[in-house]
Image: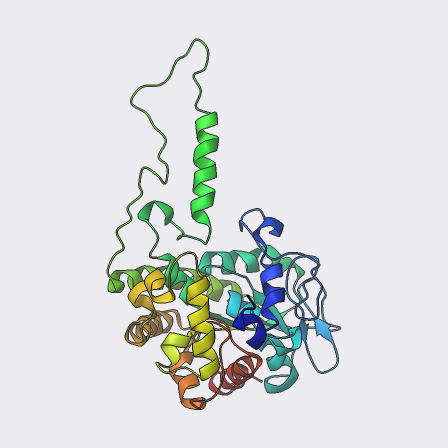
Length: 345
C-alpha cells in the first residue's frame, strides 16, 4: 500500500533510510549520532555526522569550515537538524545564513533525538574544531519534556535519553555476565548492584512535575552554555521549539492527513497516548512560562516560538510533515521569525 506520507512528503523516504537504527553511528559519551558522510539529494552529512548548511555562495559544516570565521551555531535536536526539509538548503540554519541573518555563516548543530545533556556535550566535544563563535541559538525543549515521562530508574542524574531502555537492558546483561562466582571467594552476600530494572516505576508523574523535571535539567545545562559562551563573547538564546499541537488546535488539511496516517503506523500508540497531556496547548504554554522564568534567572534570551508561529501562519499554511518537524515553508517561516524576534543579523 502506498503511504500518503510518501506522496505528500516524498523526502521522508530519505529520512527513514537515514534513520536506520542498524546503521547508527554509536559515539562515545553521546551514545549515538548521525550517520557520517551520508549523501543524497535530500540530506548530506560530513565526516563527523553534522548536516551541511548553505549560504548564498558556499556551504559549510563543523568538519567543513567556511572560508573564514567567525560563525554562528544553530543548536537543538531533530527540528534544528531539519528533519522534513527537502534539501540541506531548506533547513533553518541554511535559511538564516542565506536570507534572514546572512552576515556570518550558520552551522547546523542539530542532533537527532537528543536531549539537552547531549546537545551540550555535542558542543563541548567539538568546540576545538570551531572558529570564533558569535551567536548560539538553541531551539529545543520538547525532548526533555517527553523523556521526563520515562521511569525514574532511567532518569539518573542527567535525565533519560531516547533508546535508553535498550542501553540499560544490555548493561544489565553485561553485569550478569560479570557477576559469576569467582573461585574460592563465593558471592558477597547482601550486596547487589542497582539496575534500572530494580528502580523501574512505570507511574508517570503529573504534568506539573514533568515540567519541573524538564525545566530543571534545561536550566542546569543553560548555565553551562552561558559560561562557555562568555569566554568568547557569544550571545546565547533559548527558543522553545514549535510543536504542531502547541501552535494550533486546527491543522492544515495536509497535516491532518499525515498525522492520522502516522498514528495508524505507530507501533507505540497514537501521539496523544504516547506523550499524554504534555502535548496540549495549555501545558505547552505552562512549560514555556516556566522556561521563561528559568532563562531570566540565567540572563539568557528566551522565545516561545509557538504563539509567534501561530500568529504568523494562516489556517491553510502547511507547516508540518509530522507533529515535530516542518515543511520547507514551515522552516522558512520559523527562520524569519527567529531573525526578527531575536534580532539576528
